[in-house]
Image 1 (cartoon, rainbow, N blue to C red):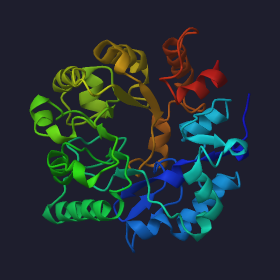
Image 2 (image 1 turned 180 degrees about the vertical axis):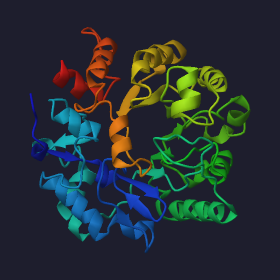
Image 3 (image 1 turned 90 degrees about the vertical axis):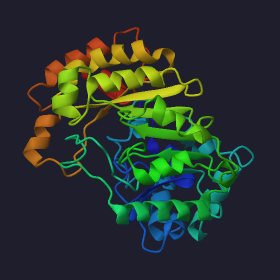
Image 4 (image 1 turned 45 degrees about the horizontal axis):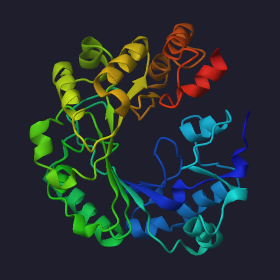
Length: 358
């Protein structure tokens, strides 16, 4: 049953901010078409006119700045599935249960008085891999950029640390490769974050080994979840097609170590589906369950064009598009991945495909 977006409010723009280089977002940058200006600092961007416009679009039900195809939550809503931690039915917003949200909705045009409870560090693109789905060249921060990254961390701590409950690092680079982020994690001071409940790491895991992890003991109690970008089910595809500069054997050893971390109970191995790898979806799924067991929530997402492809080249990668020459084979792979008795909870973006292509 299709549900109407206009009946629901997405709470993310009222609770979270994603900080990038020279701009910020109130949601995932690939799901939201409008960004926040950064010229006057992060704190002012939280209550900027752009932020108010985005929140208005949630309240009036238009969601005009959102990409409902890319956003898995709006995508699922179209198919009758509600993510309760993200989308709240307007008629059920209770001032007693949702006091902060109710107040924000009522007075957000005058500015939200509280600070975001979730902050994402995405302001260093430094990474040791050159994945075609993400970038054309390697990016490693120079000394000037490292200084800038550390200054932004200081700014966030000065403005938001008292309210932050969740830290998300990163989404545009790698937390173990970035000097700024790595130093932050190694020297993490919990006294600066009195309300912190969770640190979520988004990484390629190529350097997440025991030695690295042992150097970050202060964050161990907080890292209960992570996302690991892999995009392949075999050594050849990983090293030569989707994760350039990666070492498959080293990765597998690291994944086995990560699976033993006791406090880390929610692991999201992710796979960007494209023409190079779609035939390995089931291989990847089985491999991740074999390594991580019940800790794993395997995620399959659609490839985005972050400026790395021309129009025709990107069309070749979009195997999930109905016009693609391999689309019927892709359908078969999805059907093989999602048998009738398979739980869909850990295959978020492909719920829609399952319902529309079979």
